[in-house]
Image (tube, rainbow, N blue to C red; front, side, top):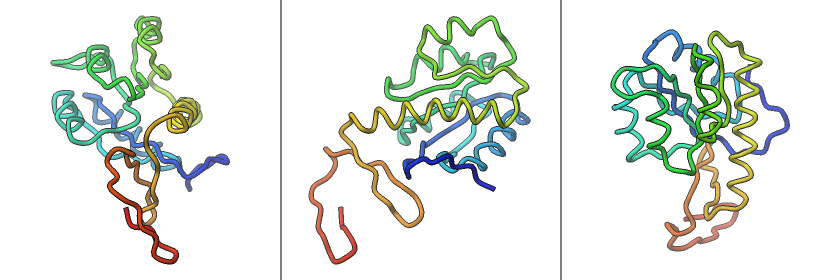
Length: 165
């Protein structure tokens, strides 16, 4: 079952970074139930996630805070300003810092599907608002929606019911 609550077809591209495999499995399971999420990858190693982000921009990152090598707080500071992030952690003491960093939300482990959905809805509203004011469009490719930067477009050609970008 997929959850969609009257949303348009914009899908948020998502990754998750957590050194606990069980936490990543929960995020995978929950994300698969939410129609406006497209979970692209999960990482137990924050350095691997940073490498991935060099060539694969995303809209949203779920982050644990207490991780080896790079903390979630430090990781969030390295994200582009257009990438939203949600902390999913067992530590309440970082919540104020997280919101001062403009985190979309702060989930306390263990959390259930309803709390996960609530955080994702907040993120989706931010993404929709930003997409309305940004220099990109969403293009349907098969069953997926792909974000295309206006500056990357060379031309748009109509061919009956199809468009070529």
